[in-house]
Structure formats: structure tokens, C-alpha cells
Image (cartoon, rainbow, N blue to C red; front, side, top):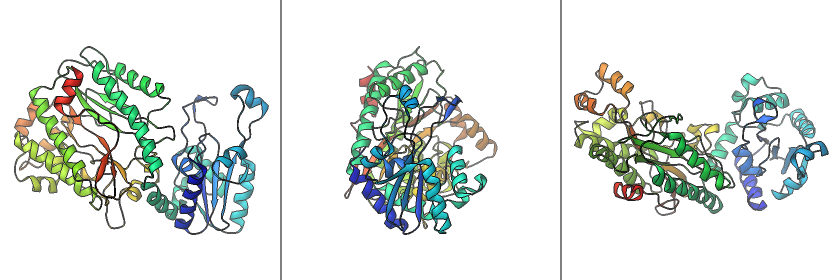
Length: 461
């Protein structure tokens, strides 16, 4: 946990921003894998963690704006529980650590909520992403489970999206801790990758390092020689001479802040000339985007700049043609770069995605595009000091997408489909770093992980 004053101040800011009513923040419960006592690894709800800090299942928080009171409700363990789990802190003891004076059992929660409802005061809650949370809200508030999201609070969503977007020094320190683990991961993998080994061996190494650091993954590991599949979670392929291996992975800090780093590595230890040509384009897009990440600049504009770098590079080697700016404006580059440049990052690797990307990455005036590729951009608004986000351009050769566009004669003024046939089995390349916006300029967080061709080949040798 952070110091108790941090949680108290966070709740105070949220109260002022929402204005009136009562905020209900349910924590997560245990989730069974195949029977009740055999559960998945527990991960606390990030919003509950941010304001109440208790990293245990079965807790609920209430922030009563009107009366200026905060509550924590949970379960005090009995001797039957302690036999299996060992001594456990009481609800009151945990609440004291996060500056909450009012506590009770889950039965008391029902009484408090009934009282609030009888007073016809508004109860603010976020759209739930777990079925059991939906059921709990339904039981407490008398709303049909199918209608829960319709009654979620827009005031709370906007207030939280605003507040949690600005990372404090304590939060940056936590992200740096997660990035230290990422550095160890890539330092090890660059020594172990070689032809003849299997992807799952590299996944095992990532998990070993994360576990050794007392951490957990911040998202399921993406590691594949089929980099053309953006989120490939299958790890059964053998790594062969000439393959490129995409590794997109992250760890969590002790307070559950994320890292998210991608590197694309040659299995043989050296890039082929063709691989090097494509890799250098992606690297230039990555470095140019980071350079232009400054306070006040719209991230959408940085995404489009990255797209122009990619289109220009592909034009230089003959895969694209025509006017680069026109190609990007019309979306022709998205055949090769079909996703957004990056996303906000913090306690969630896609920060606050559960409350809605359009509230986190967009504004009332900056709307999401409907254009293929650009529509997947998770962050578009102006960058401000305190924002932490990823920069992850990529180039992919996706046979199914190439065939679809070619058959439809799409963007023939910009794409050289004849030459493109030579790249059908290329795969994909993605390079990702985590960036903080400062009062002036930016900072790439974490100890540098090799990403130039020279540095990668030297490390892998």
C-alpha cells in the first residue's frame, strides 16, 4: 500500500469532481476455475485499489460525498478460515491503513445502501466487467442485471478518467519497478533465443523472471514467430532459422502498476537484409513518434505522423507508391499498420479500458475515427504532463487482409500488389516503449532495452 494520506486525498479529489451523491466501488471477488474452491489467480479491481488500496477479495467501498464519509465493507475471518489461511487482519485494521474510519460487514453494506436508496440519493457506480459484480449491484440496487451498464454513472466515469490519467511521482516509481522486470525479461531472452527451441520455452523464461520478482504478468504474454497476428497467444511453434519473434509482454509492480514492452528479435541472432529494411522503418516510426510526444500535441497527430513514416519507408522499397500524405489520409497504410500507435498505461495496461476508451483517450471534441486502422487508436487527445502511454508502431504482412484488399482493388494508386507478393510470409514487426509526458518534453521510462539493429545483434551474439 501507499501511505494512507494518498488514498484519502484521492477520494477527496474524486468527491469534489463528482459533486454529490454516493460512490459505490466494489472490489473483485475470487473467481472459480472449475469448482468454487479452485480459483484463478486473484487480481483486485483497479478502481477499488486506486481509492481504497486493499488487495484482498470480497471488499466493497462507499464514498458518501454528501455526508463526507468513507466506508469499507468486508468479511472478518473466523477460526475455520484461519486454520486454512493463517491469521488475517480485520476489516477495521485494513481500513485504518487507508484512512477509512467507517467499516462493516457485507450485511451492513446492504443496510447502508437501503438507507441511501430510501433517501432517493444517487448512487454512482462504474460499468462492471465481471458477472458476479453485476449480480451484486443488481441485488443491492434492484436493477435488472441486463440493465446495469445503462445505469452506470457518466459523472463518475468522466471524473475518474480525468483523475487517474495524471500519474503521481509514487505511481511513476511503481511503473519503473515494473519496467525493471521487463528489462530483465528482454535481457534474458536475447541470450536464450535460438533456432530449434520452442516459443513456450521463452514464455516459461518470462514467467520465471516475473515470478522470481514476486510479480505477475500485466496481460497475457504475446510471443510468436507469426507476428502478423497482432495478439497471438499460441506458443507452440518451433523457432527456426530466419524467423522473426515478436515478444509483447509486461509485468506488475507491487502496487499493480504495469509495464508494456515489445521487441521483435531475429531467431538466428541477425536480421536478413529484407528484415532489416522493414525493421528500420518501424524503428524510425517508433523514435520519431517518441520525439514528437510533447505536452499539448494530439496523440492522434503523432499516430498519423508515425503512419506517414511507415508509408514513406514502404514507398522507398517499392511496396507503396504515390503521394504519402494522400495515402495516409485515405487509410492505405493500414494494410500494413492496422492498429493504433499506443494507449494510456497505469494500473491497467490499457489504462481504465473498463470504463470506456472513449472517455480515457478521447474528448467531447476529439472523436474516434471510423476509418479502418485509425478506428483502433485508443488514445487521440492532447498529451498533458503526467500522462503515461505506449508508443508501438508496427508493420505486418497479413495474407488474408492482403488478399481481401487486392481482390477488391483497394488503394491500387498507393499499393504495389505485385511486389507485395514477395512479402506474404514475412510476418510482422512491432517495437514498443513506455513514455511519460513531463512539464517540458517527455521521458522514456525504464532502463533502455536494446532496439537498434546493431544493439540487438550485438546482444544476441
